[in-house]
Image (cartoon, rainbow, N blue to C red; front, side):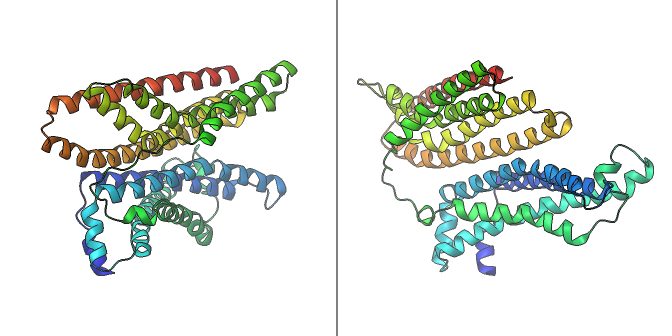
Length: 374
């Protein structure tokens, strides 16, 4: 195992950023979990049903940030094999199988999550021991649970959830075929299946119809569910829209700039479209929650929205790094064939403009639905 860890050394700037971002997100989630524990300790009433319900509700508020950390861990784990092929080759030459490689990636992500949870715990303990001495009976007193001793077993159990979830998400996200060294052949474009296209069209249409019918009848819950389904369907359509935009750019005898931009957009539609879809849906759902749900008032939803946005942006950065690593090999082949650098830059600019237009169109639709729900 020591030899594997030695081969895994040599972090670059992006690897350090990945590690630090995962640790910061994990520290924030650990602080939210400890805050829920502090409220449970400071709330009077003992083990009553109302006390248990209030504690469970605060723990449920921690589930979206936990899901964001798991999504971030999965995205970072999937971005490592295409960016570090030499690292995987060295580990495979040392006799490491796919199971051990996935375990190594999971341990790496879990260590980053564990470091963040330790930082969150230290900050929580520092607030309990120092801040409360300076400001006794302040607004942070109930959230810190300063009126009761901190149970070690409950604290360890809550904090163990974050690195365990991060490690499991990282191990599940990496497939065994992703760990094999990539060859120089072109990867076949993944076309959207008819079932996926039907779902991307029918889900927002059916959601909008349900929302309109519920608004006519005056039913709040079906209207909310229909609007959320429509927003989710719009996010589901982002990869298909990116693929269709790339196909439109490359149709009808295109020039080299259009051809390269269109094929590149088709090739990266799924890697880039998934985090963009999650970002769009997350923003729209946050707007709906802020407008419709009464428990969403206060600073906690803003903190959670910022944390989830940080995780989604980190996942988007991981996918961009994965696409850059894949296109670097393609651009090297084009350079060897004599393609000018200005041509590749114009193709990249056209691809970025097309992606921005698709994202603005989907975001505008999701914002309109969120405003209608509000």
